[in-house]
Length: 192
Image (cartoon, rainbow, N blue to C red; front, side):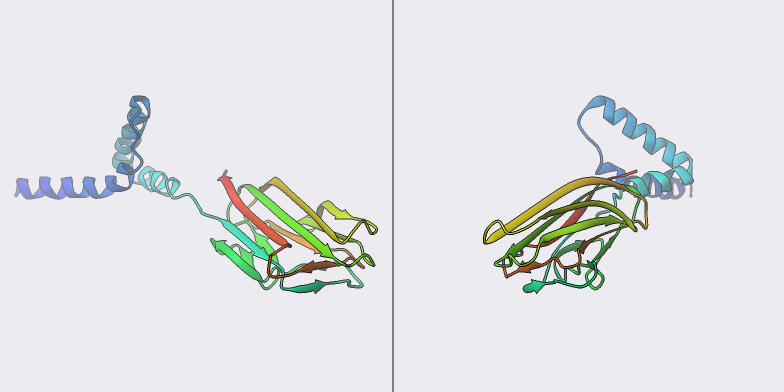
């Protein structure tokens, strides 16, 4: 009976430790910290759950493009809907609204591009918003040739539930084709 009970305890400890074995590294100091956390987790079930959940980094990455054709000009500033989704790991980008919603608190890298062709009649550019706050404008004014491109990337600290989106200014125009010249992308650098 004692032998069976010891085997059950061994199986339970081995089962709890399996997720941590994958985290082991060869450096001695890191191994000591690792095993200290494992032992602590075995002695304190709440600590085990905290440690286990911290090893499962939330994965967030999206990239989408505008549909083919001219977008705009519109009479009012308009949220752009990038409906050609290439990647949406974690499902935080909504292809029907054009809005990215941060699932966890962290620092995210957000990037967008814009392009216009043969439309010297209209300016080309975008606004970037966080929640309802205007963060930046990027664009080109007047006619300066046949093809116009702009791009921007920045790191943003976001809380869970914060939204990020782009808007086309009133009387501005963009153009896209099968080459995805207008894109909106982002990914989680690290959670906090």
